[in-house]
Image (cartoon, rainbow, N blue to C red; front, side, top):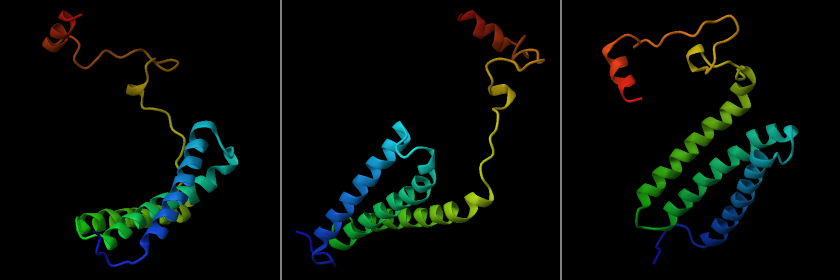
Length: 138
């Protein structure tokens, strides 16, 4: 039996679970099939993502406030989600506008084919004992 600090928490928890389920479904559909199009990116990246994180933290804190068993664990999980959510809000509303991620090419070592004008480089271990051992397994 729960002997927590909050009476009548079930309605709030159920409402929060319902809201988070709908937001999660919308976020998944946006990522998988493009729900909302590219115009919805800002809404989903700023609003839905942050609400999912902060709402998850709130559910954990509600759980910590309503049960005796594992109260400390639920509180720590909830507080960590809330602190992560605060950081995510600060990032999405301040720093993401100042420092957008620039498009980049993978470093030359990560490319499977040499770029135009480049010659394929020999592996660093070519001509070594390691190369002989590795080639013996082929």
